[in-house]
Length: 524
Image 1 (spheres, one colour):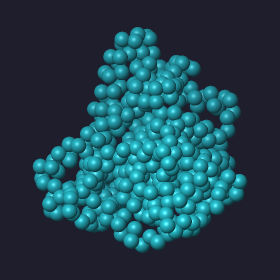
Image 2 (tube, one colour; image 1 turned 90 degrees about the vertical axis):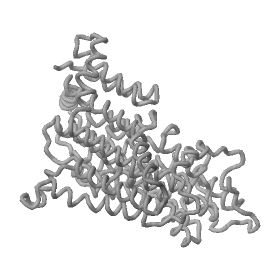
Image 3 (tube, rainbow, N blue to C red; image 1 turned 180 degrees about the vertical axis):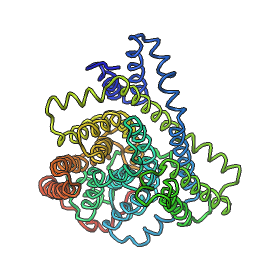
Image 4 (tube, rainbow, N blue to C red; image 1 turned 90 degrees about the horizontal axis):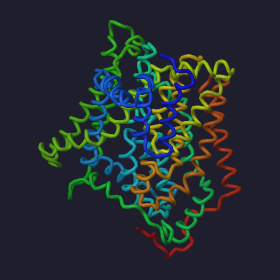
C-alpha cells in the first residue's frame, strides 16, 4: 500500500512529537497510530485497534523479538549483580593508588570508563562516584570529571564488543534486515560499524587530548584554573545533583571489594560469544566465515549473558554478599530496570513495520534518486538529523529507533555502505545526547561526579561540538573515498587542529600544581 508523500507523516510525527514533548515513547506510539489509521481509511478508532492488533502485539510475539527482550532483561540482572559485588570499586581503588598527578587522575578516569564498556548508566554512576576522591585530591574540577565520565560512557557502549546498547541496536538492525531479506548476521553488521562510528571514536580521543595536553578552552578552562589555583573543585554557589541513584550500587558494609568479581563475569561474557557464534552458525560443517555470517547473534549473546549472570550471582552468594532469596529479588529488579528499553523496542519495531507497509523508505529513496542527491552526503544528512533528534529528546535510544527504519532501507537501495549509514545514526545520536541538558546519561554523569548539572553541560558542549564537527567531516571524506580509515585520519587531523586552536584562542594556562600550597580541595 503506497501513500506517496503522505508516507512521511508517521516518522515525521514521531520526530516532531519527540522534539516537542522530549519523550520518545508517546512520539513513537503516535507514529504507529497514525500509520495504522492511514491504512484503515483514516479511521482513528480503527487505528488504535490496528496499532495493537496488527503491529505492536505481533512484533512482541515473534520468537526473534522475544530473544532480544530476554537478553536485554538478563543484561539488567548482570549489571545489578556487578554493582552488588563491587568489582568496579576494587578496580578503581587499584588505579587510584598509582595516580600522582592531575593528568594521571584524568587519564585513569578515562581508562576506567573504557573498561566499563558494557552499560552506560552503570558506567556514569560508578566511574564518577568512585573516582571522585582521586580527582578531588589532584584538584581536578568536578566539571572535568563529569566530562570525562560522560564522554567515555555512551561512546564505549557502541565501540565495545557487547553491551546493553549493542543488544538494543541489534534488535533494530535485525528487524530491518528481515524485512529487506538481508541474511547477514546483525551482530557481524554491528561490528562493521565500529570503524565508521566517528563521533564515538573522536569523542574519546578528545578526552585523551584534553587530559594529557591540557588544551582546555572555554568554560572548562575557567573551571580547571579555579580548581587548580584555589582548591575549589566546584564553583561557589554550585548545586550538585543528589546521587541517590547510587544507593542500589552500594556494596555490603565492611566488605573489601575484589577486582575478580567484575573481571571473571566479563571474561565469561566476552569469551563465550565467539565459540557460540561458530556453534550456532554450524561450525565445523560450515567454514569459519560462513558460520559467522549464519550465526544466531541474539541467541549467542543471550546464552553468554545468562552464563555470566549466573557466575556473578554465584560469586556474590559464595562471598555472602547476598542470600539466594536476595539474588532472586535482584533478578526481578534487573528485568524491571529494562522496562523502558522493552517499550521503546516494541514501538520501534512497530513503526518500522508501519513505514514498510505504507512505503516510506521507497518514497524517500525514489525522491533522493530523482533529485540526484549524491549518496556521499546521505550519511552526513542522517548524522545531522540524528544529532537534532537526540539533542531535543535527550535519548540516543529513541533516535536510533526513529532513524534506523529509514537509514537501513536507504543504504540498501542507494548503494551506500550499510556500515557507514548505521554508524552515522549511532554517531548522530551520541553527539546530540552529549550536547543535550536533558540527556539521561548527561544527568547521571553530573550526579555520579557530584557536579552542578548546568556547569557540566556548559563546559562539555564546546568539546562535544569540536568532536562533532570533526566527525561530520570524517563522514564526508569516508563517503567520497569509501574508506573508513581515510575518514578517520581526516577526523583526527581536524580534531587535533580544532582543539589546539580552541586552546590558543579561548584557553587559559592551567598550572600543573596548585599556586596556593595552603589551600586544600573543597569536597562537596
